[in-house]
Length: 335
Figure 1: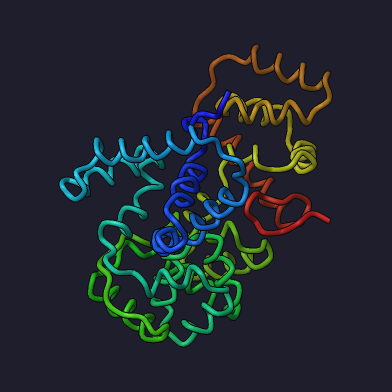
Figure 2: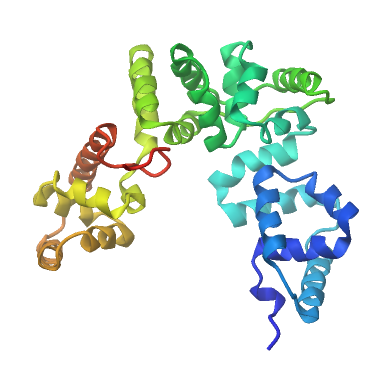
C-alpha cells in the first residue's frame, strides 16, 4: 500500500512541498528559515526517495486545505500564529519565538549571526559593551551562545552571564540600534522592535552547554558579585527529573553516593521515567528492595521530598564537577 501523507513527519512534508516548487522558489522559502530548520528539511529532502504520487498529492492537498481553512492570509494571522506556536511548543518555549516573529520586524542583522561560526561572532561583537554582548547572546540559540561565550576571555564571561540573567526585555530603540550596527557590519539593512529576551532561564540554558570547568569558574565569579542571582541560575541548570538524561554509568556512580533513605524520599515525588532509570541501574535484588521500600513508605511531606531531591542534585553536581559523570548538555565527553 502506498504511504499516506499523514505518516510523513513535519520536515518530510515540508521537504515534499519544497521539492515540488522548483529550485528557485524553494530557495526563496528557505531564505526565511533559521539554520536548524534548514538543516532538518535538508536532511529530509536528501533521505526522501521514490515518493509515491499519492503521497505528493496528499501532502499538497493537506497544505492547501490548511491555508484555506486556518488563516485568511493576513486577516487575524497574528492570533493564528500565536495559537499554532503555543499549541506546538508550549507557552514557555514559544514565547521568545513569538516575539521574534510577531514583534521582531526585520532581524537580518541578528539572524545572520545564527549562521556564523562562534569565533566569527566573537570577532564581530568583542569590542561592544558587555550589555550589547549579553543581548546578542540572549538572541542566539543556547548551544551557539555557549560556544560564543567560551571564546571570550575568562575575566568577562561571568559579567556577561550576569547581564543576561538580569535582562527582562529590551527597548525597541536599543534593539533597532543594535540591529543597524550589525547590519552595517554585515552589509545589511534596517530595524528591529522589542523582544522578551534574556533572564535567569536564558542564562541557565546557556551555561548548561558551557564546558564544566568553564561553567564552574563563571559561577564562582558570579557568586562574589550576586550570590542570590547565581543560585537562582544554578537551580535552573539541573533539576531532579534531568537524571533520566545521565548515561547509565553516571547513574550507577551517583547511586553509590546516595543513601537508601534519601533515595526513597526523593523517588516518592519523582516522575515514573526517573524511577525506571534508577531501577534499571541497580541489581535485580536491590531494585526489588527499593520498590518494596517505596510501596511501604507512607505519605511524606513535600518539603522532605524536595530536600532529598536537592541533596541528590547537589551530589550530582559535585560528581559532575569532579568529572565522574557528565550532565546532559554539559559539552564534555567521558574518557
